[in-house]
Image (tube, rainbow, N blue to C red):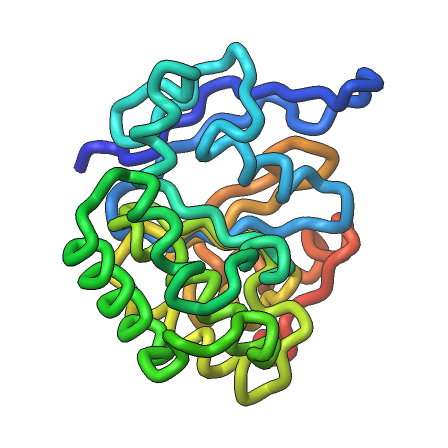
Amino acid sequence: MNAVIEIKNLNYSYPDGTPALQDISFNMTRGETLGIVGPNGAGKSTLLLHFNGILMDQASVKILGLEVHPANLRMIRSKVGLVFQDPDNQLFMPTVFEDVAYGPMNMGLNKADVELRVRKALAQVDMQEAAPRFSHHLSYGEKKRVSIATVLSMDTEILVLDEPTSNLDPRHRRNLINLLNRLNVTKIIATHDLDMVLDTCHRVILLDRGRVVVDGDPQEILGNKELMEKHDLEVPYRLR
């Protein structure tokens, strides 16, 4: 199968010169769900920002065959939806409808097409009834769902999520996991929630100090006690 994401020899340093990513290389095929795990400071969030060009390096990063380059960013960002860890960083319009409509409107779609996309995206996250509500009145779990809808309304083919289950109670965490499993798109999930990785991901990459330590089967990697402890992680409870 053709790769929808191709990364070859990606390096990135912070403005003070501290290395954040070092020689990252991997591919993803359409429909895969990839978990990215690692200790604090491993480079997970920094890596996510390269998928839609918020950060860029001289390395070869291709999304759906397009180089991540300023000339291609409009097309890439219409296909790669980045969901931030804090939904309040994603929702800034007065109502849920306006938040979800913002992307399609900026694509130049007509009113009918925008409304169709908004309704479809909200249905995908089970938030159809919330369209007229004020975004800042939503619960944290509801805001997480609407944040996902804001990128689905762009007809997203690749969904990139940073710590999607953080600060969720058990019921809303389970609802979000079920939602992610229903979405028929390529997904990249950076998280400390290793049980969620087992529930959602076909594959996992362990990052530490900006490098790929291992890439493979979630149960084999997350169940390796020596490997996990070496990188300041713990084996998920169900694998102990």
